Length: 203
Image (cartoon, rainbow, N blue to C red; front, side, top):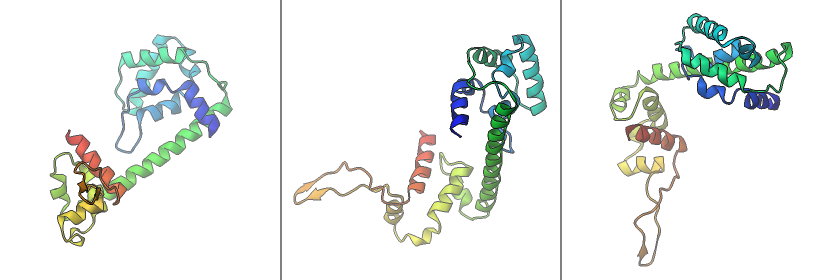
């Protein structure tokens, strides 16, 4: 795994920013599928820029991804500036494609779990109420419902605030009492993260 990481840093760290994070409904991402085909920088720079643009266009059409000539030229220019740590051979191809296939499998599993999570969340009566909150999308709504659970567990509003750990800490001694205190963060960290995602989306 260290060799895979080293290879990625040496050869593909800059290419990631040139490749859009386009994603299909089944979880396939453009940059991951790209590595499956163009697994070595020599797969790109061993041909002319024009030939690569034509090949990249055919690949985008076959994989149902958007094509831009400027993006193809950027990829070609980036690959020409790399010196590969590993040679372009069958062993290197096996190493890279196996790691990429594992990533694709994990991504597909994540998509299936997310689909099931949303399907179950939509059956709950409070789902659409939570979804109507500003800054809350389908995933965030499902996460909020899963973390909060049955709201009848919380007798007061302050109980839910305390469970989320966003209530201010108490800092007082005798006559000394501060008013600008940090949150306690004593509750569910997953709920706090979900709330933060909703808040940041609404800013």
